[in-house]
Length: 157
Image (cartoon, rainbow, N blue to C red; front, top):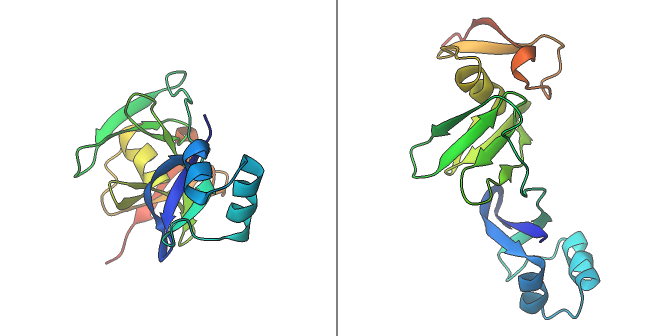
């Protein structure tokens, strides 16, 4: 089943929930999914407060590679893999879609943004990263796999 993310129209980095195509069709008063896609592509807010984007979250499996489960300050449990994928643990283990912020690939977990490279370095590589800078062996900050990471220095405060 196709799902969509509902983003706060005033802060699109804040995910307010998910919604299915059937719910969008009934909520928008549309007769078919092509009408919904047209409205989404125009950028019209849903219920005058949400921006709707397609979610590539689904039933992607993380069990084919090395992974660790971690918790944030909230009640949710998250899973990070050695290739840099982050999932919410639950009945479907939905993958969080990373986005770019200040030149870094980040995900939002429990209303907090985490740098994906730092999650991989800490939870997969087992590094103590507090106060340290993480670099990329191939120079590509989008390649956040465990084998591509290296500690390059100490943060100056």
